[in-house]
Image (cartoon, rainbow, N blue to C red; front, side, top):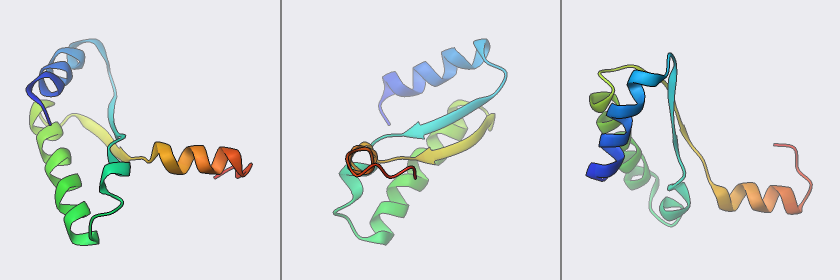
Length: 77
C-alpha cells in the first residue's frame, strides 16, 4: 500500500461508522502462486488494519477482470 492510500484510510475513518476495504489489485495477483497472492493480500490487510486501528469491518479482494467477464457472460455471481 502506498503512503497516499494509508493516509486516505486514516482520514476517512473520522467520517464513517463502518469501514470495509476493497482491494481491486487482485487482477495483478492472478498470475502469482496461491502462496504469493495470500502473502500480498495479508500484507494489505495488515497495513489497512494498522492504519484504521483495527476498525475495518471487512476485507474484500475483488477482480475487475472477473467481474467484467461475468457481466459479458450474464453471470449473476
